[in-house]
Amino acid sequence: MADIPPLIWVGCAYLLLANLTAFCLMGWDKSRSKRPSARRVPERRLFLTALLGGSVGAVAGMFHFHHKTRHWYFRWGLPAILLLQLAATGALWHFRIQ
Image (tube, rainbow, N blue to C red; front, side, top):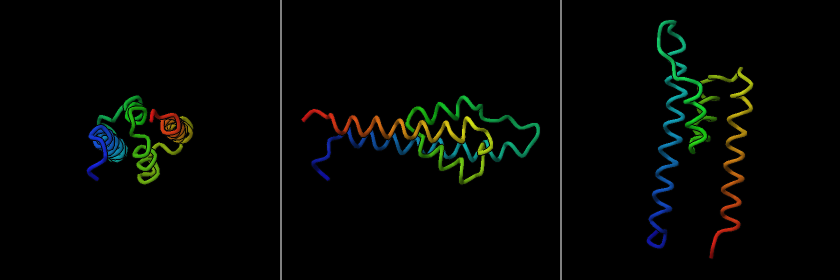
């Protein structure tokens, strides 16, 4: 573990925080959706957290809380963001500088 660069640790901590935030936002919005007068989390913010690295947490939260699963742009959009991020990560890993 001592040979892992600090930047990797920072990146992992960031991704953990981003995914936890996305997951919690899905749960928070689901709980607020049951109250008619409650302020909701804007859909734009849910997508933004996924785009900023929280796509795994957003997809997990969507299916765990059964939230936004009827909206096609969430049902297909969040997994598409996840796949694009995985492809970008794979490309970065493949073409990394030695």
